[in-house]
Image (cartoon, rainbow, N blue to C red; front, side):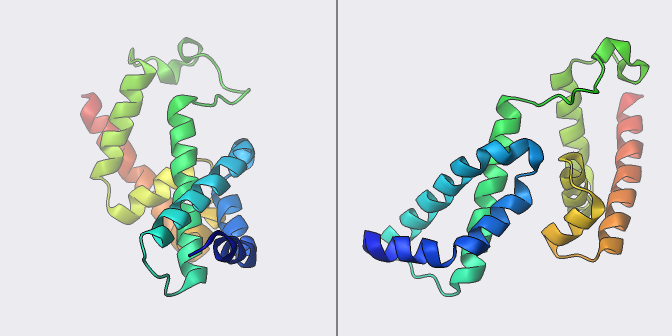
Length: 167
């Protein structure tokens, strides 16, 4: 595929790509949108230069945009965790008096999330990333009640797992 055809493909599907990117890039990640757009372009260029044909461009481009956005957001969060202005220092909050460093807390949380059923884990990860149950439902194409249920059950299971590992 030549560069003109590639640009035409991107331009003709800009709305769907932008929609997927905005779905993942919440308010605190708006500054990452240009990086995500670049990732999408690179992924598509690589796929098309490999000689692979795209059967269903709308769904494929949407999937690529979501995947790229999630990867960029996760990479950013790993490199620079964002603290909310209303958060207290760890030692000022008795709930954080576990004596564990933030990295250790993060590791334990990650291990606990891995033990959850797949759908609950996905719902909890999105919820912890700042999505409400309606946004989680849209993200995974669930109904809001299913998303709310999976978040509720996931948090309940997560509490049990973390309490069990603390003893």
